[in-house]
Amino acid sequence: NAGVTQTPKFQVLKTGQSMTLQCAQDMNHNSMYWYRQDPGMGLRLIYYSASEGTTDKGEVPNGYNVSRLNKREFSLRLESAAPSQTSVYFCASSAPPGITDTQYFGPGTRLTVL
Amino acid sequence: QKEVEQDPGPLSVPEGAIVSLNCTYSNSAFQYFMWYRQYSRKGPELLMYTYSSGNKEDGRFTAQVDKSSKYISLFIRDSQPSDSATYLCAMSPNYGGSQGNLIFGKGTKLSVKP
Image 1 (cartoon, helix red, strand yellow):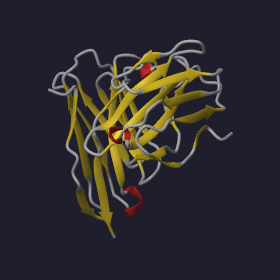
Image 2 (tube, one colour):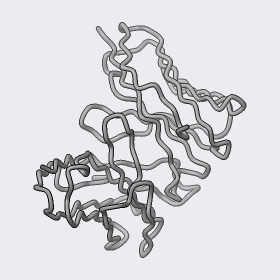
Image 3 (cartoon, one colour):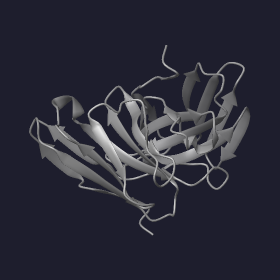
């Protein structure tokens, strides 16, 4: 039981390049989330998927797109990377209300945009 | 005013000290209160979870919620060097924040010196 896994762990991009961050969970959770964490800003929600087939914007969605590929996988895409997107990205998942009381986080992807 | 305020520290204490970490909030709809611990270069992990007002104890850790003052605290007794981490408060109006509305504080960096 690996929990929440993220790939890659590190990535360096040039401005304007695109990339997809991958996230998978093996806990049969319904909800999945993408956050970014910046110094002095805390964790901010980019997008979330309350259940398979649905996605919704969070606090900072501009410049990102997401795909809930199936119940296990939730990817985050940067179409045209900008230096302001340099951050640590965390994926998380949670079970339906009443089943668990927490979001479980992956180990993160450290992204640098030059 | 941010919804959740948390002093970023850093906070440095000697081993064995009692540590007090705090957050204030402005949204009276918050009902679920959590503390996450994040070690350097790792994802956040749930440490304590409290519903509504009151205290909850788990080993050396005690979480307190005072909804009338919109103030939550985490106490660590007999602090250990292994407690050195960033502590994030988080809160939500609904169970686990599965509607994408789990709001995090910026985190307090704690260092426990041997």
